Amino acid sequence: MRAISGDSLAIDRKSRARVLSTGVLNRPVEERICDFDDVVIPLDPETAMFEASRCVQCPDPAPCVLACPAHNDIPSAMWLIEQGKFLEAAQLYHQTSSMPEICGRVCPHEQLCQGSCTRVKSTSPVLTGALEAFVIDYERSLYGRVDIPVGQSTGKKVAIVGSGPAGMACAEQLVQNGHQVTIFEMKPATGGLLTYGIPGFKLPNQVVDNRLQDLERAGVEFVSEICIGKEKTIDDLFNDGYHAVFVGVGAEIDAPMEVPGEDLPGVYKATEFLMRGNVDPALLPVELREKPAVGRKVAVIGGGDTASDCLRTALRLGAEEVVCLYRRTEKEMPGGRHDRELAREEGAEYQFLTQPVRFIAGEDGRLAQIECIRMELGEPDAKGRRRPVPVEGSNFIVDADCAVLALGYWPDTTIGDSTPDLKTHKYGLIIVDPATGATSRPGVYAGGDGVTGPDLVVTAMVAGRKAAQAMDEYLSELD
Ligand SMILES: Cc1cc2nc3c(=O)[nH]c(=O)nc-3n(C[C@H](O)[C@H](O)[C@H](O)COP(=O)(O)OP(=O)(O)OC[C@H]3O[C@@H](n4cnc5c(N)ncnc54)[C@H](O)[C@@H]3O)c2cc1C
Ligand code: SF4
Image 1: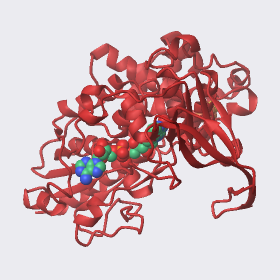
Image 2: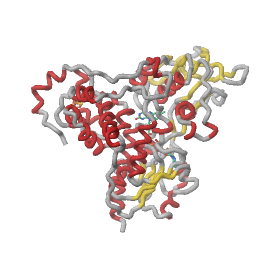
Image 3: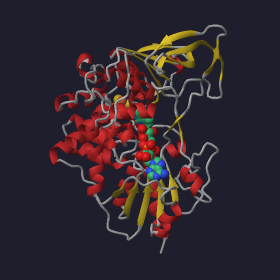
Image 4: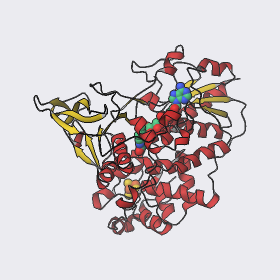
């Protein structure tokens, strides 16, 4: 749906195009690094209406819609918000997204809708992400809940393995089609990386809990602390009476660095560091409840968003000096620029073309120093990124009380290993038909990071929705 035609706005477009954005307002640095609360100050209704009015209503197909993996109808939503029709805008987002208030907060908008917004050329993009979160927050503040419409019962039961965004989105769609859904999760709490990975200063826990509660109210059953593939297999689920299974197990195994000293006390893997640093201890196994000992100086190794999250977490845990060591230059960094800007504002430093080769213990046996080598950029690799090449004899020492390895993630092979005839790639990622999420096993579908490798909340969410649609068709054909 497009709320208005591009023509009716033609006269107004030029004047709209000159209006400057208010920008997203963040809490002052000195205040926000003392806690783990949301960094962003929420928009108020007047600012939201003003910001939405900056949209020039690009002709269909608008660049922002094309760039959004969920294809949210952003121009129509902007038009409704501009007029103060916040609930109508919220309904529009619910049509294409299973968690707009979450995507509105954590999507790398500068690489997606905002990055392709026509307004980038004249002034600055429309704040489409903040506005998406605003309308759903508004809806929730009015009713204290966001209802998921539940379809008439079909009598079909679906098991979902993994409660991250892929599993949540799949469940949200399936209950709307009247199927009975149970989500099996191996961790104590649900939400996947929304709960255990992305820090609360980017995505407050309450926002995730609220959406999980919406699913519970819609009849989704959650069974925690059960590892499918170990305590129960996918075949057991079918034997238990489930008619179809969706696998949304993510890719959460930290990639190792494979250099001497990696196992020293004081060297953490990013997942453990972020969980211990950010997550409510009540949601963690006993051995992970203590905060990481950051000491005075922390070095984070890696160039993705996880590295930015670790830098910012280290600062909040009280480290005085926090440095990111990355083997290429800033241009090749895979992480979003916005997160790096926030990390820099908060005091993080970056040291490029630097590769650790050894972690060195002090007298107490804990990490004290990191031996590094300078790198230079060589020929491009298969992805077109210039390959880092060590500069011989350039070794040097960086002092550090704590190091965090944020080097990327691998999938867990438990499901692939325990499910006969389920085809996987050699890395353990599950092979699916990209259009439907169907795996090589009839009735078994998959999506999210466990299929693509580490990606984004929005892409996992879209995969869960896509699979739900195909599963609905599959279930309707069963007698
Ligand atoms: C630190 C960090 C920060 C990130 N920040 C952002 C961000 O700002 N924006 C963004 O868009 N993306 C971000 N991402 C990526 C995003 O979180 C993931 O792409 C997304 O969560 C993938 O969703 P998923 O449902 O596929 O998997 P997950 O969220 O990983 O959920 C999978 C779930 O399955 C469970 N599970 C696994 N195996 C089993 C099993 N055998 N039995 C039962 N349960 C099982 C896991 O415990 C987990 O709860 C970040 C990732 C990390 C690690
Ligand atoms: S690209 Fe920007 S200006 Fe154009 S419709 Fe989308 S939000 Fe509006």
